[in-house]
Image (cartoon, rainbow, N blue to C red; front, side, top):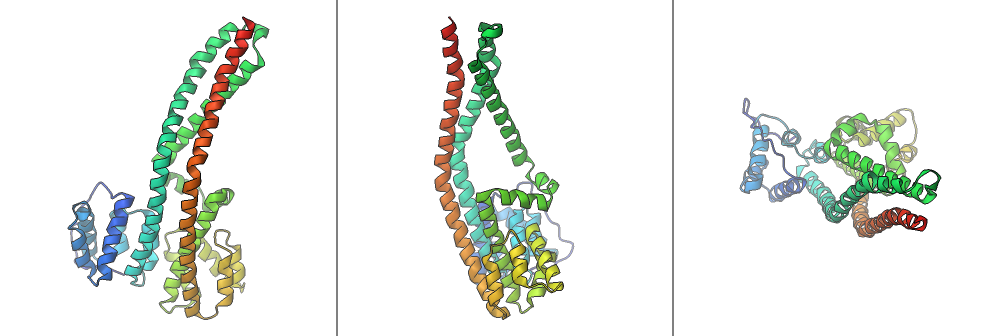
Length: 351
């Protein structure tokens, strides 16, 4: 575990944390310096030469000087929980350079997808906001005015259908806006309130996300397990350590059930297959390999394969997402147009 010892050192508090992109840049710079043979303390000092990263590098250095671990220093510097989770196991046995490299690859992938998603959703979100205002105006002003022209039995089915459609669209948009605000403002609260089994059921019901999540968790499981096996410990000890130390709740849960099954004498291939959020191919890797060194190598190879597949999936989804959004917007415009014009045509017939 990486630390620099010097007791009673004051740790300054910085209110603003780095963006995800800056966190990737920070870790990438640190990885490059460590790979060139610089000690951690010197590498952090060199990272601090960049003005944007200076305060974070100084804070991490000061935390290390109190004797705390590098992962704890990143946690205090408000790095993303996924970074903390990934590096916890990698740094447990001193593999800081390899851990930083793999973490940077994951971050780069995530940043690419989030950037593209923001770029593509900016225009549709503005349109949806305009639609919400238009629908609200139609609901509160236009349709009550139409209602005055119809009396008693003269009110047509078309008018009722149009009013129902506008009200349905209005409340759907309102719920979507409220849920988006809650999800963006209180993501941590939602994660804490929802049980792991419930979150797992939700993941399995969303086809595209299920595919990506299974690949991501399989990648993390393979990377951490192979990293621990390389240190010379047994598979059972590696799984027990992951169960206790990994910050990812899904990985901890998977390792718990596998270790429990192994104690009961069940074959590991069956236990891997029973893990619904791991890829089925992993069971064949464990079935084929009895040698720990070969198993570690095969898991590392599969981790590379899983990462490449995730990258291809994200690129594919980015290409599909934009036309789907615009098709949905076009359909939305047609529905609003019909909801507005059909009652007007119906009214003209009665005049």
